Image 1: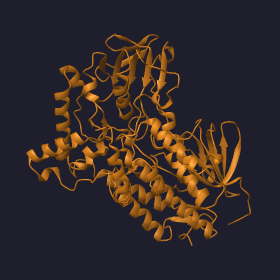
Image 2: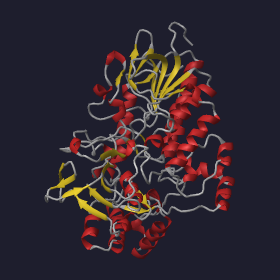
Image 3: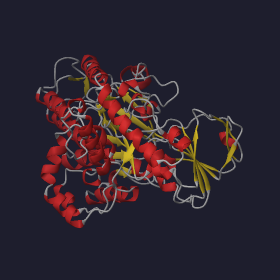
Image 4: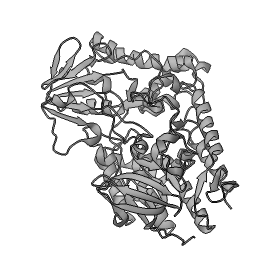
Amino acid sequence: MSTQHTADHDAIVIGAGFGGIYMLHKLRNELGLSVRAFEKGGGVGGTWYFNRYPGAKSDTEGFVYRYSFDRDLLQEWDWNTRYLDQPDILAYLQHVVERYDLARDIQLNTEVTGAVFDEEALLWRVSTADGSEFTSRYLVNALGLLAKTNIPAIPGMESFAGRTVHTNAWPDDLDITGKRVGVIGTGSTGTQFIVAAAKMVGHLTVFQRSPQYCVPSGNGPVDPAEVAATKQNFDAVWEQVRNSVTAFGFEESTVEATSVSEEERQRVFQENWDKGNGFRFMFGTFSDIVTSPEANAAAAAFIRSKIAEIVQDPDTARKLTPTGLYAKRPLCNEGYYETFNRDNVELVSIKENPIEEITPTGVRTADGVVHELDVLVLATGFDAVDGNYRNMDLRGRGGRHINEHWTDGPTSYLGVSKAGFPNMFMILGPNGPFTNLVPSIEVQVDWISELVGHAERNGVRTVEPTQEAEDQWTATCKEIADMTLFPKVESWIFGANIPGKKHAVMFYMGGLANYRTQLADVRDAGFRGLIPNEEREGALA
């Protein structure tokens, strides 16, 4: 290891959610490096620190929404519902931080505003909102896939006399019980909030931008005997997860919908509707739902039939019914469509009746009606994947900002590194796997740790991918995405939810098992595609 330039830390990790916590553990506790993690929040947890809105929970089944690297922790930590609520996940992450004594190297309430690579010193210069600067040899961005808040530009927003909140910044002192509440957005967060809020508020007005295909979650109590049996079987569970497509803890179907009878299709759809979970319905029913227009149409028609069956008011049912492809991130909830049968819930389709302005008393729609509110909730999602990167003054070689590299959309090598940014790594960076995120995080963090360890042992001061390797990975991700129906719909998965954002492939859709194979092949080939900065040729020694 070179000692020509002394850094404040061997590595700086930005973020202390699932990714940042595990990265800190790997680099500090296992590789023995000096590491500092900076977290803008007042506590650890990332997504699960900020998203405290009513109904916030993971829509991955709880038994696989956890770390797998600590076998003892898997046995010790219990759960009693099929899905984990936000407080449960936050408590779990706080426990992991305490278990591994990580808090002493996590600096809270510290927002990183910039990171610039110093080519002469071969160090990263990291600046924070309070004007401080820190240097490190390695920089790991654990910024969060869904973390950069998207606030829509609606006229009059500042005039509202009530409270306006984004679900990603839910204040501790906000109680919506008995209040008149409006919510804009019906994505994953919005649908969760709607189901929970309807049972609390005096009146709920849902401003729907796009109707959603939503299936039941199947949430409910879990018997202690089932928890015990799962723990006993955890080795096999995690083996299946790591070698699956979606990593959600179920076996994906290998049967094509078009290969069976209509009667059998309906039976399988009903069976999985009853079991619950969005990813299960999309990937566990038939193998061609996301690739075959005919199979996709069959799944969509089934969900539409359920909406018609569940929702009592015909006009509300019509507004709730999607007409396009079933090819957005799959959603699931506890009684989403049933919620619109409540007397205190009103649906406004803002495609048919747009929001014209926010007034001091509420939301005025194109029909002239002012929907009077005490609280306006923005469930308007995120500038996903690359939003937090672009929001920083992030500069690599030659002082080039990340935005200059990403004019045609965000790119990476393997979802973890970027040409022109030596010794910089990303957890859940652009073109990482489209899966249950925690297993993907573990795979990426383990691989980054292997690369850093390899560089440390071999005296390699800086590494970065070649532009050719990055371009090839980008092409691979696009090729796989184009084999699916996902690019054919407007979705945050491709950046379509942000006005002016270029439509781009932002995920590797080949599944976790194939992604792990790709990473292993690169590692076994001497970290093919990653080169020492000072040599600019060949592979790592």
